[in-house]
Image (cartoon, rainbow, N blue to C red):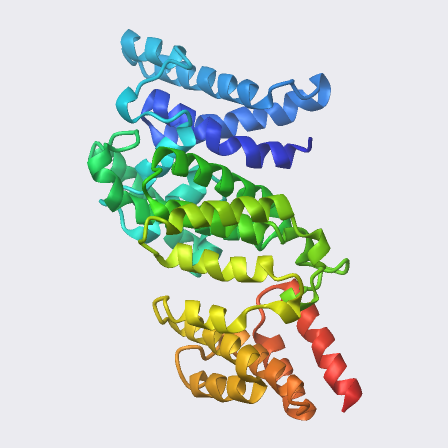
Length: 396
């Protein structure tokens, strides 16, 4: 296993365990960094241990003990830190995963939503401050200050490191779900970080076990499983994006789709359909269609109408209506959105281009594809748009 993979898999666990043992966020991250640095020196010579996570956690714990000794911390604290594996939290609300405890701590209502997400991505996913800053479209120095303030607030406010009691779970749950979905999308949109998507699904499973009566947790798990079932077909060999219409449906993960539909059905039986359940239902429409032509677009359009009508949801609904009622109808709806809040959003001209292509208005489609190309954020999207542009240009 490559070191980068081990880092992605183990960083969150090592940091979470050290925070639980020491109660010190900065010390936990510093000791985790030293443990990974030690691994970089030792493993090329000695080989990767059978349980790299345990090796890293023990090394980080020993670094913490050394630091606490130097700081003349009391014997009781040292003994507590040395007792790795001894549970510290209230067993009534315990779950067998330090990372999930850390997630609920990061998502404390005393923190702003953006700080909760950023802190979780840093401490659990191991994203660098620069990477998180890029995700939030702010300078790295700004994000660094936000993270520092969030950690200080947790320490100064005495926020406990544990899953909160049952009566406090509802106010934390939306933030936890939002963090999990962002974590998933970070991995889903970047093949190099695919482990993040796997980690988000694993944590979502734990959350569903912890909160079996929370249908939105199950809805989110179903949504992520459905998206993840198509992961291997999303990109062409040259790295270009492959749309749903063109994906090889025989390569979709059918057992995972079946599991997701079962999870979604169970969630919907609660009779409280929230945004994650509705989005999962939309994803299920795509995942269960035997061919692209069999997609139930009227049902998808109706489901989009149940979601909060953000500009992006309105665009997606316009696509669904256009696929159901014809490209001319879809183009009309998209053009109505053009002067709104979606200015600068590359999927707006990309959608216009697709409807124009379907209407055989190739010159206008080419213009719209060029506009989308100038705005696209990823190489996969640019490659896809370039292919479409060449297609309509050749036929012009």
